[in-house]
Structures are given as C-alpha cells and as structure tokens.
Image (tube, rainbow, N blue to C red; front, side, top):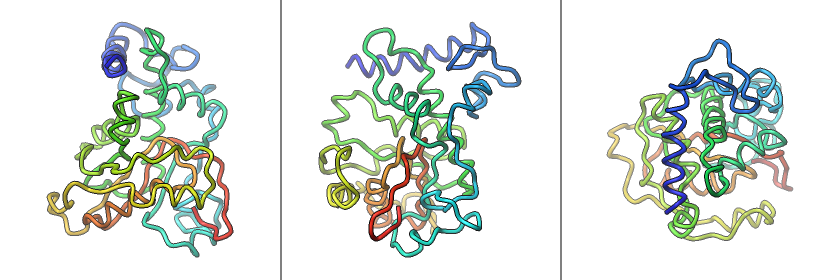
Length: 268
C-alpha cells in the first residue's frame, strides 16, 4: 500500500515542484534553458551534460534490434533470418551507466521520503517518448504496456511499464489499455537465463481478456511498451497474444536496451 501512495505522491509532488521552482535538470539540478515544465523531451528534463552521459541510439539501425545496418529502417541480416511477432522494437538508449541508474531508481524506488523524488520517473518517461519518435512509426490506435503478474504487482505496488505507457498515450492523445493484456503465469525472473531459456520461460505467459476489435479498426496498430528490453523474449510473447486478439501491427517501444547479444540462430 505504501508503494502505491508513494507513486501517487511522487506524481503530485512533481507537478507542485514545476509550479513552485525554476525548471531544473533532474540529474545535476542545473537550471534548464529553453525548456518548460511538462516538456516530454529528454532535453526537457536533463541538461546537455547529463544527456551526454547517456548512450543514445540513432535512427539508422535495424528496425528490430537496432544493430548497425546499411539502410535505415531495414532489418539486419540476423533479424531478416528470424521470425518475429514484432514489426519492430525501438529503445532510446543503451542500458548502461547513467541510463541503468535512472531506470533502476525508477523501477525500484527507495523506501521512505527519498523514494518520492520525481526525477527517475521523469527521465524514464522522456526516454520512452524519445524512443517513440525514433521509431518513425505512425501513431498507433492503442498503447498497451507489458503487464506484471498480479502477485508481482501486489508486491511492487505499481507497474513501471504501465506508467510509461500511460504518459506516452496521454502525450499523443491515444487510448491506453492497461487491462487488455494480462500475464497469466507468474514466470521466474529472466535475469540469469540465456536466450533459449528466456523464450521457454515466457511462452504462453500472456493472454488478452477480449478481442481488440472494440477499437473498430481493420488495420489495428499497437505500441507495446516496456521499460527495458534484453533479448526481446517477453515482448515477443506479449506481441503473440496481441496478434491472436486482433492486432495487425505491433511495435515495441522501450526506454532502454541492454547490450545486443546473438544466439546461434541470430535475431533479437
């Protein structure tokens, strides 16, 4: 319960600070020039120096794994040879150093009053907005977060992916559905699993409560939102459930991506 209250207080506190104080960098507290409260860009929450500490992706990589390719928007050789339920997967930064600290502080806020600091959430949301812009995809019909299992949600108190998805949908004025996609199995942590084990771990872990036809769109497009992508196994399993429910196009939007590794079969 405290985690839920803390998340709410952090959001309210962020708005109050925007009104009462000059707009400052979430990292070093330097005054930001040329930005305003509510700015969703990364440059709207971090100064140039703190932005420079992040390893940002450019828009000329593979549409699925963001590895270097000769032509922007094309798949790399490994992804071309690998079947996927995702049309693409775009992250804003590499999950390392400063980005890793921001994301961990957002996903696992400290206990007590120190956990009310709004910076990690603001930076994480800005990263997702940057990823959406970097994807160069048309705005979707609905934004859907990767869900937590009810047991994990009860323990953590909030779903980081749902927070990111809600903010992204609000900015783009798109419907955000946080209850359509559900996790039906409480899968073990993926942290110590290799690519093959990760895929087996999340296979059949997701389902949709109802068909997505309620959006009354023949060519239904979905932005599937998560905080960090590693091998893409979780996103693939979630996208599979969405396609079975009626989604025609599914593009994953994530704040950060871990270092790209390849299996014997290649691909994301």
